[in-house]
Length: 220
Image (cartoon, rainbow, N blue to C red; front, side):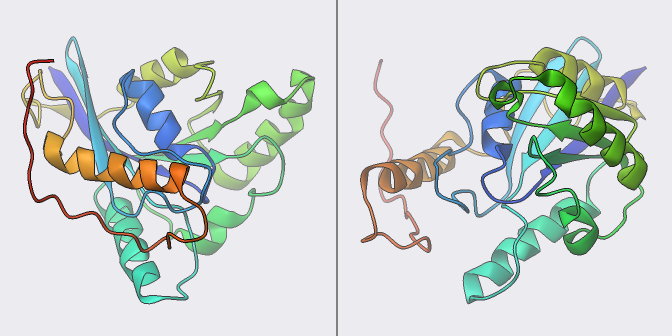
């Protein structure tokens, strides 16, 4: 029997969701920058190993609606809440974001996995134990994984946990050689936004939208 399911990453802005997706995929798929809300729509990577397939969605950061684009972003998050088999709540390495999911995410019937990201910034790993206990008390996850998406620490263990909790299916959702639900040309538009945020300052607003007019593949 095969296993397959949809997995969604949730968390506040700049918590490392896109970096985590890229680390799980072992390739650059989602845009990453130091600015919050670089990700403004759901992006999916597909991991297929042996008899298991996980379709993993990156989502925008959890925010409150202040502008029109915020309503679109919140809509993308709500889609992820409805359509997922596994929810991954991503926390920082301190107590700053511990209550955010209770305020901004409604309860779902999906399997819940908790991730504490950026543990490379914690010198004394024993300090993580009270945080893990608090997350377990508040959210009752099936597992809590301390990781560093940037330094690739704990990523393989997290991936094994994701594949472990996928529901059984008669077949995969996508061919085994697929890496994303997105066409390559649309991934490129997100990477262009990432480059704009990286290279430019205040002159580029967060609402920057990239429209692809021409796409050519070269031999290399």
